[in-house]
Image 1 (cartoon, helix red, strand yellow):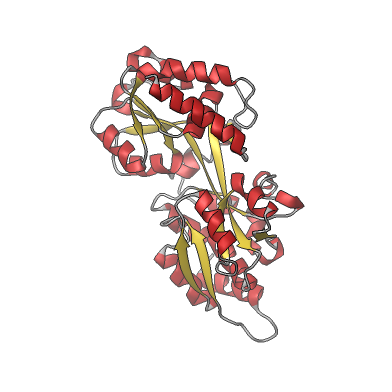
Image 2 (tube, rainbow, N blue to C red):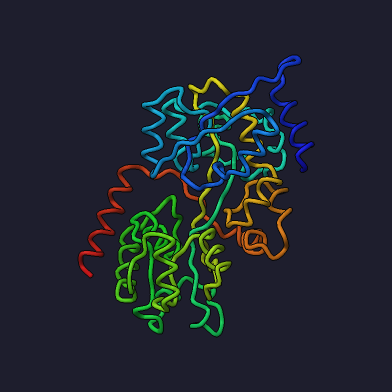
Length: 346
């Protein structure tokens, strides 16, 4: 879609009578996560007249707190699908009018109908990006790429394994390894036992993408859990790594763009969301390591060798994904207690 088409589409969405009113909209998101790309904001402003100001959060809980305590301050907010039902139940976000988002027609039904983004019986989060938590391997240490999650427990890699220091991620990773539904764990004892078996294998825990890259570049690791978008960037930077989606499956996450109930600039907010899921925006963003797009047309527009098309565009891979759903506070506490106990006993 070129700028003229984008301009015509967006103007059609926000025109009232003969006048187009430009607004300043405020977006709440993680810093550096797509919506604040300078070139993207410039193109949006040029096409619509609307300007964009960003504010950032460092956790989902901080994001919810900002919405609660600053009514009217935000017009678009990035919310992971696992937290959308909570935001909707608290009345923090309202429905997204898909008729005002022309590019919504290119969102696949399985994402458009995601039950968490459709909390309350209506679309409260426009599907935007998705990705996986799986693992990557040091290709210098493998003659053949592993196909099973059991590589983490292979004693040939003892002392050269890493997982992120995160209780929920560790428990859900072990749930996949024990053949369980990450959103309906029935045997927590089996997960604890599986993680206890893993502990002697672990060299270190990682906490950030930079940590992970440094460990792998130093040759400290053979195999480590990782995020798909991060793996794409690591591979593009020249690190000898390969991202793996094992036979057992992987943890999936889905992010949506929502409109706070208190926003007074909903037409401009819908126009911005439409631009954020536009193939023209996504293909350019993907050059710098974007997550997978929820827009099928955008994903198909990528070069054939692009990571998000080559790896995440495979239907067989998608079929093995378990997308995260909301986790109760009670279960989060259980998982944290389990994880801290395992680390303390190490």
